[in-house]
Image 1 (cartoon, rainbow over the protein chains, first blue to last red):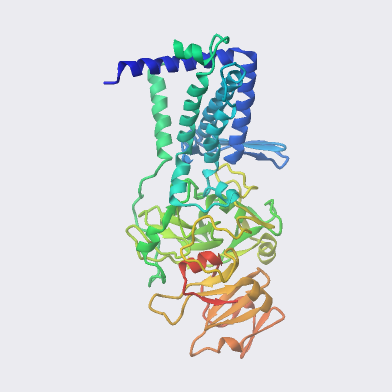
Image 2 (cartoon, rainbow over the protein chains, first blue to last red):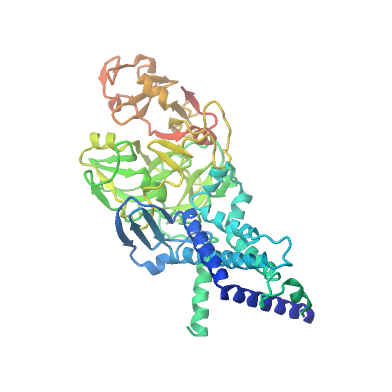
Length: 205
Length: 352
């Protein structure tokens, strides 16, 4: 049976994180950071997975037959088949709903991390906290996008693939998600939903 | 969305996510692909090849084979003359399979000249080979050995590394596939040689950026294809040549015929000389398609040294011939990157 104190502390931590996130997203500057970072990360993710790239100047939409079953067909770890292609002049986008969802969740987590971080570093007791905390946690998620076709990102890095490395690629998305959640809790401790005080008020509550 | 709907949707999503982490060994049943009378030679045992098989990243069918290929005529495709295509001609039916389409699918299950065949391409080893498939078809297992594509047949789920063309796992272990010639050439050369050719369409049933090769490019040669590094450790290291240098290769005809070894001919050298006496084989360049042929010689045939190169034709003791029509037993050849060939066949004869 879990220790009642641990359960209570966990609930309090989750509750505080939730309030801190709500507070950050209730502020105009917090929403701005969240929106810009989430959009930027999602675009970067789509580029890395090869779903967003330069177009050939043509315009048009291609949709596969039976898009529903195709959308659920996996291409690799946490990557799924595109169901549509959008050629929009200088840009070409492949639409894979579940890959988009995975990228969207990671992007939102990075966005809310940085939104919280940007508030925390402006509060007096947030010494040593850097906005890079959330960004670093997001790197595995971005790397995981390149795990298609033999992880071509290794070519860029000049690293030879090994069984261990390839296994690591398959868990980058869950590792990244977990890292971002932990980061969110840690950063949330530095933000007071009231806005006037910071970590000390949380610790004493 | 009520709670039950939410839970059902979550179940579907989790099932799909779980599915991408590993695919089981399933087969459709039926007979496997037709095999050769005698197995092809292997320098490494199936057990060793299985031991060195690794996941390439995508799961089984994560790289989808094209099962319902569509074709356009030679005037339609948006190809440059220098773009690489894999050419097949069977009983007057000529088809070109653009490299920039196959790099995304690796296998096309097709019927050419009335024969059910699979045209296969492995980008990491630079090998394009054709196999008879009978009543079944091939898919991409997602595994690699010596960086080479490991195919599976959908009848028995046996595993077939493309270059050795011999099953290393499954019910058909030890059987070898029947191979037919696939020419690695360029679109301009193929269209000139076969003006009525059909060309594999980008309307594959899948959505991909067919203008964008994830590994680099061949027109000009860039990225992985131009680099000296390999993505996976080779089965056998041999630094006599840069790893990606293309060779024209052929396997020994059978495991018993040890006096006829596997042969590798340096393509650039062959292109320069026209003909090359390659041990007991005669290598001949074909400038029209920028490819080559390997002919076997024996006690009843002229010696390879008796042939010479004259104005794009082969002069022998009894006449002058087109490169593809020298009156000697021809072998099935294909192009391969040096590291890939020497990895699978370390004892290969090398002519450069």
